Amino acid sequence: MNKEHIMKGALLCLIASMAWGAMFPVAESAFAHLDPFYFSVIRYSVVSLLLLVFLWIKEGRQALRLEGRGVSLWFFGTMAFTIYNLLVFWGQNQLGTSGVILASVMEALMPMLSVLVLWMYKGQKPQPFTIGCIALALVGCFLVITKGDFRSFLLGGDSLLPVLLILLGVLGWVIYTIGGNHFASWSVLRYSTLSCVLGTGTSLVIVLLLTALDVLHAPSQSVFSVGYELGFMIGVAGILALLSWNAGVKLLTPINGILFINFVPVTTFLISVWQGYQITMYDAGGTLLIILALISNNLFQRKKLKLAVSGRAASKEASF
Image 1 (cartoon, rainbow, N blue to C red):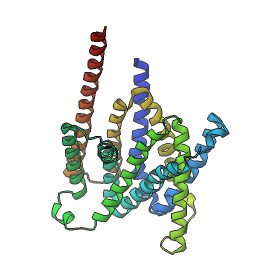
Image 2: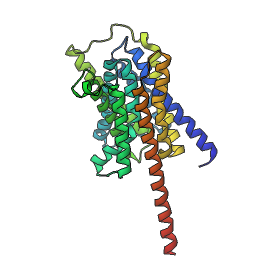
Image 3: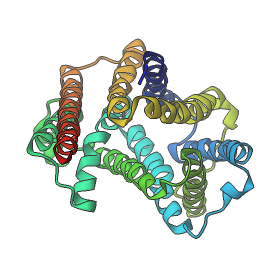
């Protein structure tokens, strides 16, 4: 890995992380005019169309075929583009400005949650050190959630349901990310596009059904009232962030690229402070614990990888 690749990969991952960090404050601004459900469906309907065009141009019409894997694509797409988008933004909207901070903090928690999902799904039990890092990250997240009012939260305060919605949404994205391993022979663009189309289709059906049941109401204002917000969410936090992240991680390798997820809550914090939000000691302290846990586990994984490589090299030398 040469210096040019490192610099380029770092810049791309930084762009993606900062775009995702800005996503939550931008969404909060849009929710004053458009509910989270319609906002998400409109956003990803446009993203789906753009990705289809990109895929057609880059890989041809044959890349649009499902190849008998439609059910799997639909499931993983629903986890990301229905469960994640609808639940995270619904929970964020219910919590107000504090939900902006919490959603970004839980985004940074994804690497740790991935370890837990793989443990339950594939039986890949993590090392005790990693389990300790997960516990530390969860403590940090709990501090951000409760703002120090532990008793009220544990007794089922008003914030309990929104927090669970955001957590379930984040888990949905973790499952989607892990699901990409089942499509290793496909390009990232193909998996992203087809799963996005199918998942967004699920969201559209749910939103139309809830509207027919009078649970949701169609936007009373033109979507152009949130045109700037939608433009950012589609072009920057959607297409640009997705492509930048995938390209950056490819250049840096996942173990290096994942560290840039720490810039998500940092970016959200900076924007929120600029908008007048008062960051509490629990927000700052909890986020620092999560970042510390992620970096510590990353260093631990690097050490394990280095020892494994050294062990294989020693075995080859001994065989000669």
